[in-house]
View 1 (cartoon, rainbow, N blue to C red):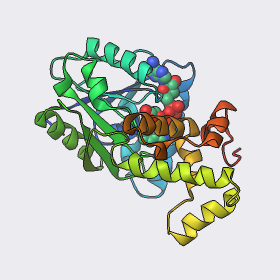
View 2 (spheres, rainbow, N blue to C red):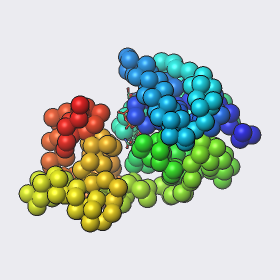
View 3 (cartoon, rainbow, N blue to C red):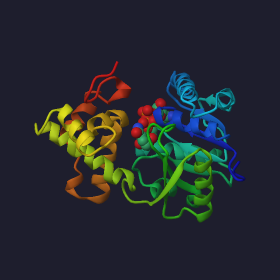
Length: 282
Ligand code: NAD
């Protein structure tokens, strides 16, 4: 068990927050999972239970570890004080700034405040607090229980001690860390999301239909899934938000969000989580 970090609070119990709570609990941390949306915490706990059961069936965790891990997660409408506070709410800068303000109030002097943001500058979130040396990006990948990577993002003022504590905590959650500096999209989404955006342009311009676009990248480039299927998994609202951050932050037209991506988001076709994106889900 990490010396510095024993308790973890996760703010936002959507697909990412519930996964983070799960891997933290399996790693032995005491976890509080919080969300403001009615019903979301119950849904998250059900998802966690389902995911842990599947992992135990596949032998990826021990059956006897399942129940204790579940018991280490408690839920709360309000975030609880903890050694490591991980914000995993909707990708919206104003919302995250408000959450950071709240987390700063409950943080102890030693607490670390991390964000799972896909693209919002960590330095900007950190500057909204009086303790930017204890703020960091902790970017988990989706689906969290299955993906081995955490991209750790160092804001301009993040201290070496904060990085060391967060790397140790991520490793205790069973993850491998890659470190990135704080530029728009970091490493992962600087590369991934423009590729997805280009796939949406191919669809919009009729270069190919959704199946052909996905087949080319899956079977031709050996990607585990096509970019449109992946966009549905990530959430089209999240993809659009990331493209906007790249476009604003880098000021280059090559990052302009595809109008078709914007239309889908406006229509509420957000991907798997809303039942429909580029594909339909039951
Ligand atoms: P989601 O829509 O599934 O979940 C977001 C959750 O935040 C919702 O349950 C919502 O009720 C909750 N929320 C909103 N305002 C809140 C508040 N004030 N306090 C507490 N909870 C609040 O979104 P997600 O896909 O889980 O994404 C969450 C974060 O993780 C985003 O910053 C996103 O960019 C990032 N992320 C997403 C992915 C992905 O593939 N989806 C991958 C890596 C990082």
